[in-house]
Image (cartoon, rainbow, N blue to C red; front, side, top):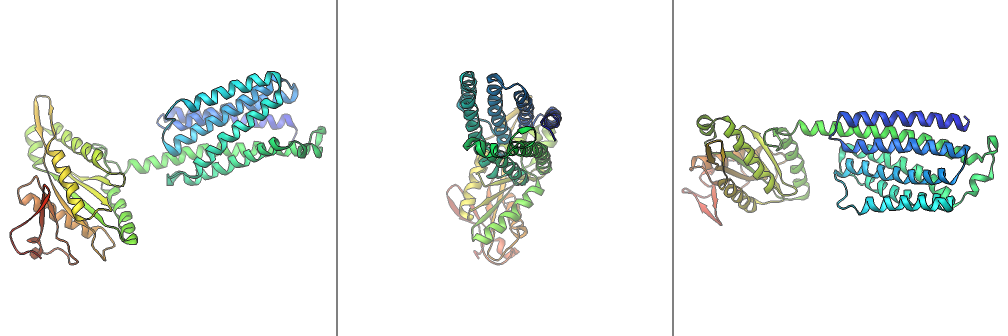
Length: 411
């Protein structure tokens, strides 16, 4: 394949990928990383066109332009992948300003010395490439990890050719190919074009992986409150139970229910009832720790999974939540109201390998709190045996900062 045919094939494929990614970004504007990757394909197209022109009419202008384009290309790759694996942009403008200044410097140096400008452009691109590879390899998003690591390996392949060119040009000039052009230069160019094409395919794979991840997440989100739903809670609970059993760590569960919610809906309307659910969901989201898991289990019932918390700590957390909810007051039109909740607390017991028993005990404690007058926290009995009517008298209630035993025998 001669150089013109190779460049034509590269231009067509890069233009196709740039257009495809642009259409994907337009159809799904939430996935902002795709727009960066579409820009990277567009700059790759421009770089290939510039290199093709430079091979026919070499000049300082085309060499300087190619150097600037490769720096911008690697920067856009970094920004696109950063969105996918980190979900955030730069915390300051220093990074983009530094890249912009480097592009201006390369363009200025190219006027006087094209070789130095090309070397500086390769070094800058390599620094951006190393940052991108490290970021892709360390991604914590399970659904994107395989694609991210394939992208990292492809980038390493492209960067290895750049390093070889940067260190020494002699290996590329030793053997001559067709048209008296160095054979290794031809192979390196063809290899780079093939890898870049595969990298463009991986951009689309990244978009598909993100779409699947989002679909998986959205089927586990309660639309009204923004919390996770029961299905997500069950998955998280089984995962945390396994972790707790393996590492001998405590695990607590809070079950809470809005007091007299049906009466609120019947007397003040469903709009105010929905507002109550959203307000409670907001309190839970703001109060949850980094590893805590909150969910709406259905209707007016909510759950909070507390990894690493024992019974006493979980009871304190439940009391703080109860107090915060009791302080809520808002108006919907001319109607104003507040909320109270009843909360049941339980923990994972020794020998248990599932969360069903813990859930049942938390549910029992919740209904005990309701029977005792609502707007309170009830804690299930701690012991190896399952809950029985005789043990219900042994429940204790956490109020303020001390334990209050209930009437009846303590087991």
